[in-house]
Length: 477
Image (cartoon, rainbow, N blue to C red; front, side, top):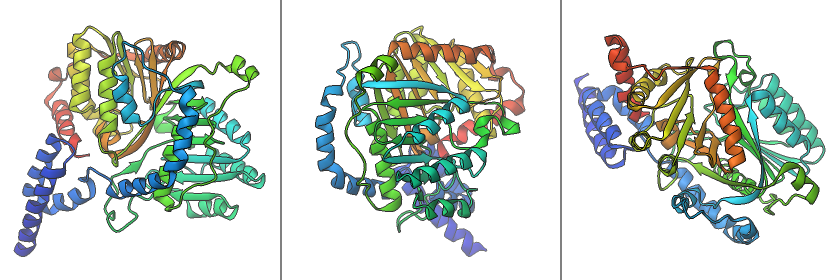
């Protein structure tokens, strides 16, 4: 027993050096070093499963896929030139955001705001019905329930029509997906793969990285991104967290190509093969469709993940908050911001901006629910408006910036989304769209309780200990 203890102490020391050199944050490095040298028998295995900051295998696969598609993307770049939107003079943050996204804002898009499961699934379903060539279908959670089976039946129908279908799911989020369900799809020549973060010699312990993206692409001209996965719980059929409140987007236009490119790289990682049958021609509506739908929206799609050279999500949200001149409204189920975004929100409050944060009263994560109290209480004490959504479980990931732009996507305000998950968000720079998001969030606020007067310092010792203990551990996750 003494020998085992000494071995783990030695491994804890070695792991501590690795943590100091590679931890995602200074707080995370300190927390790991303390844990590794105090509870080494427990902390050493945990560190090598949960402590990695970069998904090196995906980085290498991404480089390989870039080599293969570079020539094709040079042609795409030329085709996109007429749609590229130049920044306004009072928007210096644009260059930073464009660099992070690896794509510019593109005009000529139609955008539909989809509120809750019925609208979202109906829109995606109809989009797949209209598919003529291919469908790219990627979700963090894919369930073999009623809505999952409805989409499966539709996939069978489209495959019989000659439409090529690629389905990608996260094996952690979709851990209860039966192999028999997948086999039924594969028998119909539908390609189905798990993202498989553990693939390869270098990645046996990479279970902490998750592909949290939700992307549907039809024929290279339409895409859907947002907060909803495929499951009946998103249709208010999960008693503990019902009704489910979520938001998604349908985008039709040139911006779809960034979602397609993101899927292409994820598929290359999962399959080690390149999809060569995709269309990269930017969509242009005919005159009648343009008049009816209004293809005038500027859209930027930004994907992020643990393979990025920079912390894309954290930098993007920090810059977006700092660029606001009037207001920042945030709706998120999990609010554990890092230091950079927390300080950006503090500065926004000091500048007398209208800062509002909407989180669920009913949460599916005990740890996050407690940790969030620390951050929300601090912002409330400075003057932020804090609301807890009462009409079910609020799962949407939405940010409203002034009267000009809104963000809808898969990114939560927590360390996991900022640094560990593969994510995607859409930035729509359009006053009319921003107004529709404002109306939606005002309706959510109407179904919420204003808890801006809540002060954690006034709560009992047990409540404070739970909150601060969870917040202290958040950099490790």
